[in-house]
Amino acid sequence: MLEVADLRVEFRTDEGRVAAVRGVSYQLSRGEVLGIVGESGSGKSVTSLATMGLLAGSSRVSGSVRLGGTELLGASDKELSRVRGQRIAMIFQDPMTSLNPVYPVGYQVAEAIRAHHDVTRDAARRRAVELLDAVSIPNPTERVNNYPHELSGGMRQRVVIAIAMANSPDVIIADEPTTALDVTVQAQILDALRIARVQTGAAMLLITHDLGVIAGQADRVLVMYAGRVVEAGTAEEIFYAPRMPYTLGLLGSQPRLDVRAQRLHPISGAPPSALTLPPGCPFAPRCPLAAPVCEAEEPLLTGTNGHLAACHFSDQLVGLEPGDLFRPVSQDTTL
Ligand SMILES: Nc1ncnc2c1ncn2[C@@H]1O[C@H](COP(=O)(O)OP(=O)(O)OP(=O)(O)O)[C@@H](O)[C@H]1O
Ligand SMILES: [Mg+2]
Image 1 (tube, rainbow, N blue to C red):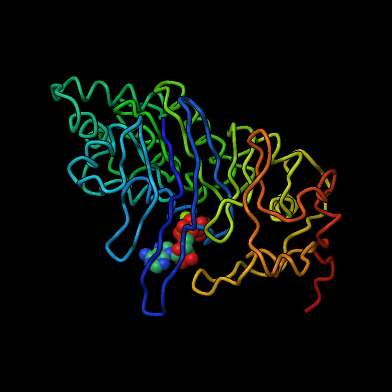
Image 2: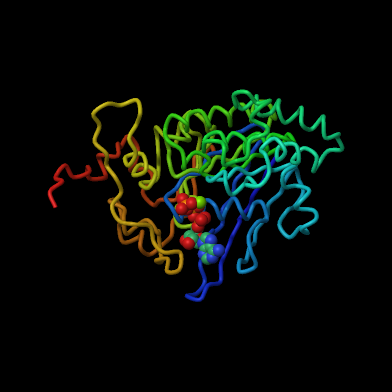
């Protein structure tokens, strides 16, 4: 369905070149959910924006993005605008950036339908009510007349999901769709996304810094660090048999809802600046397993049967828990 190969994105800035995405490849099959996780700045959003052809002039993008066999990189604005909305829909963190504050939400859903289909206003409006109902907006016949500011954040995100569904896209890209919402609303939005997927048959790219969002949603997961994919595998492999210390560290950094009285084992330090990437493995300065070879040579992303990791010491991770590599968070809270 969607095939991204060796995607690279560089920004020219006053301070120099920023290598934001460094050779990312992935495939998305029909109906599949691919999760992308990584800390802030790892290149998740830039990867998705480049996939949609939505990056501004200061960027240099190379590689290949094929949707159903058609190359999108380098396609004209006219070709791309036909693809966006109709074949690929995008959902962002803040629904206010996607919605227009001066139009009622029902009108905005109906317009999304009419932009790509020759239907009457009445038919589009009826369909808009159906879609709002599908994403569990109560009283959709009345809610269609509400302006975005009259709805809660969670309701607004449902409207954005309804707009994404409007044209039965092949691919839905959701970039931190639940990050701005509290935990109970998060779960409801994830449900709405699942409904959107099932009703449209779309494949989904689910981008988040929170592994908890991906658990139970994604079929496969990419872990990104410093603009690269550092581990790729099925959700099962990523959660239960990670082969890259960074992935294990992420697992140890986040509380699990199914475990009581647990200690977190976060990764110390911060990701490197994309302006000054160290030679070798960019995770080496934070990695408990780092050896001289890690600082000399950036490991390739390799593995078998689709479970890939970029680490010189992947084999040593077999059977390890986060607490075996990373120190527990300090209990001492005195200043
Ligand atoms: N327009 C831009 N100009 C220069 N650098 C940029 C630009 N957009 C992004 N970057 C840089 O590219 C890198 C990747 O950014 P990106 O937004 O993809 O991160 P992210 O993984 O989505 O993080 P977050 O979790 O914070 O959303 C960062 O170092 C960022 O500073
Ligand atoms: Mg982002």
